[in-house]
Structure formats: C-alpha cells, structure tokens
Image 1 (tube, rainbow, N blue to C red):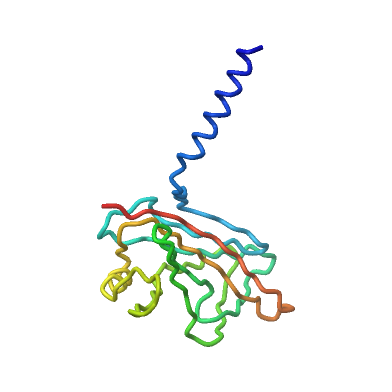
Image 2: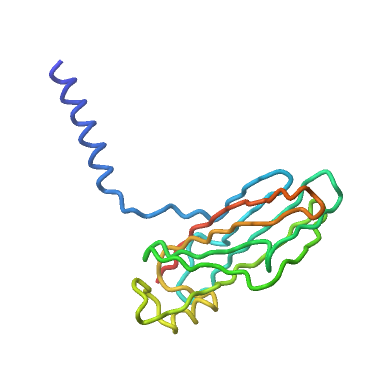
Amino acid sequence: MKWLYSILLLILLTACGTESMNTGKVENVTTQEVKEAPFTLRLVSEKAQYQVGEKVDVRAELVYEGEEEAVQIGHGGSWIWLETTNLTKDYQFGAAMNEPYIVTPMRKGEVLIEPYHFSGGSYHEDMEGNPYTEDVLEQMSTLEFPVGQYEINGRTDFVIEGAQGEKYQLEAKVIFEVVE
C-alpha cells in the first residue's frame, strides 16, 4: 500500500511541475473558420512562422452559402475589421472604418477576399505602454513585423440588404510568430 501512495505522490508532483514550466506561449493557429448560416468566415495566415524582413501574408475570406443565388451585404468601409495584437508585448492595435455605409454584392459559393493590411496606431511620447516608435510603425505598415508573436483578429459586422436587419458578427483569429 505504501508503494501505491508513493506512486500517486510522484504523479501529483510531476503534474504540478509540468504546470509550473508553462512558458505562456500561445500555440500558432494559421487558419480558423467560423460559420453562421448562411456565411462562412475564414482567416488564413500562409505561415505559422515568418522571418524578420519577410512580409506577413494574411487574408480574410467570406463565403455566402445560402438559398438565394445572390445577396447584397451592407457594411462600413469593409466587410471585415482586422485588428492586430503583439502577444509578446501585450499591445493591441485597433482598427477603424473610415468610409461610409456601402453595399457589396455576393454570389452563392463565391469567395470575397480581403488581404490583411496593418491599420497601425500612433506613437505619443506621453502614451504609457506604447513599445513602438514611428519608424517601427512605418515598417509594420509594409507588413514587415518585428520579432514577436502576433494575433490577427478578424470580425465582421454586416447585414443582408432587404432582410429584417439581422446582423452577422462572425469572428476568427490567426496567431503566428516573427523570428530572427
């Protein structure tokens, strides 16, 4: 019986030791697909890991799979918001819509594609916690990110024109690293 107690204690200590060695790193996710009938949102990163100086290649895809042959969706300047978070530095860059309400036609089964673009941020010397200079923000606007782990969160906010105002708010994310 004493040997059973020793084995259980060893298992318990091993499990606790494994937990304390967690690095806090989030697993890379290169594709996430979310469905809300009749739409499918897919967010895709071409790689799980990019090299410094390499352009980040991320895109959002929206597919209409409803009963109608075609619909029109109404939204802000884009059908997708793409927000960036540097998980390494725990810093989020917001996204903004700068255009008025527009309507986009969608045919059944066709894929609407929106390439990722860095929407940026601004650096103010008195802004607490901003780890970026204007030079780094300019570099990121060319899709060449500094070393770190990043999450791109894509979310929609649109309606089907002529329908009873049901909003479609799908959300997907991808996580990738930039290394030396």
